[in-house]
Image 1 (tube, one colour):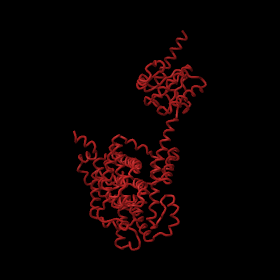
Image 2: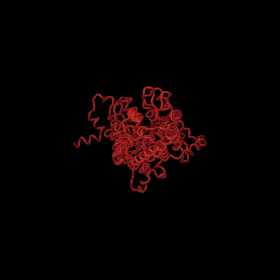
Image 3: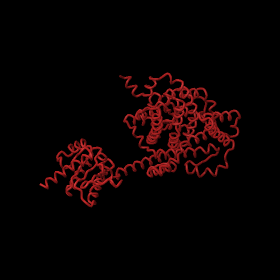
Image 4: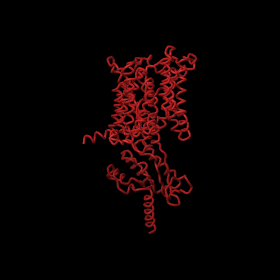
Length: 571
């Protein structure tokens, strides 16, 4: 029993226990390829997060192994991500105030808190929270983060110093300082870019970032280019061995500043992970569990914090490398993690010669792949509201920062949704020559049923829109040239749960229609509506509101009652 519950929490382990030996060769090849891509990228993202280069490698090993056991995706690779690192830097750097040790401490704490939020969200089955970041918000966010990253790396690429801290000020300062570019540093940057572009064009299956970093590092080490002022990771404070963070002077009071940003980071990371995981799961023909992914992301981030790393998410580029090399299971993650662990244990000294400018180019190259301004512009023709939301998010990220921009974008998205619910679209319905019900106005063959007004309200009814719903029906009834004898409401679209305010307003609508000698019919959800009215209006008579299963039966019932009424009058 215990083992069954234990395995339920570890879908990745279940997959590994059912491992097919025929997958081993492909998984080893994919694991080595993933490690080759992950190594330089992890080091570069550590620079982006303003922590030591080796912290990026720390952020790969235990998190990848943890996700291999707890994740439900067979292809997903977790690790450092441009967006999460940009968010961490935006939150932690002002708090650290230039203290590198405090920067590392706060980064670890924020990662730990983020993991806790993910575990809590999984416990309450909040996987649907990912939907708070809609596609327009994500598009604007990724483009804004990409621009932020690229602008932030220009100083390293050119070998100049920019004192401005904010994005707009940096953009303004760059043109005036280009003339001061450090030529040897600029040369290393140009060589890195040529290697990245050339490898991508002529040997697309090769790990371009790894090749660029290896070549430039060998060049710096072999020709002692550091003497010409080229900055390397070593000269920036990277120590040999396995550095440990010192907690003796940590300020616990700063933790309160991290809880809400860590929640935002958890949401961003989860959405990014789910987009990648779902796309590759669909491609390979299996499903994933959103709540299990939330839990796996939380555990992976806690493992990253325990190993002195920073926040991680689903890495789409490394996942694509895994899938392209035929990876079949999460054994790929374990193999890649072990390779990176060997580098950490035995190859830290050569890493000191990696030029900072080369890492800057790798980051710009990675950020460029996040850019999709054409995607934003295409939204303008397809959906103006989505376009406005994407542009708003993009502008907010650039002007006021990543965290604040995301918060405002989510708020605007929720307000757009509430506006849709407050004032939804509506239709008057009629029948065509074949007796099929359609919206009026779409074609001349659809005509209103004499004496009947059929109405559809395209939103769930709740306390804040039911007054508008009632007002719209009465206005339509009073504005028709010939007052109807029946009002039929499509209950399927609008009656989704038993709201007391809604049921009370329906009583008022029934009363106002009765004064106009009109009968009210609710078509659809007959069983639920009968129970709701019985529970909340036990004294209500059945004939006061007619409840029928659907619109077609409503029309048949009306026809039969009209015929019976006509027979009584004729007799």
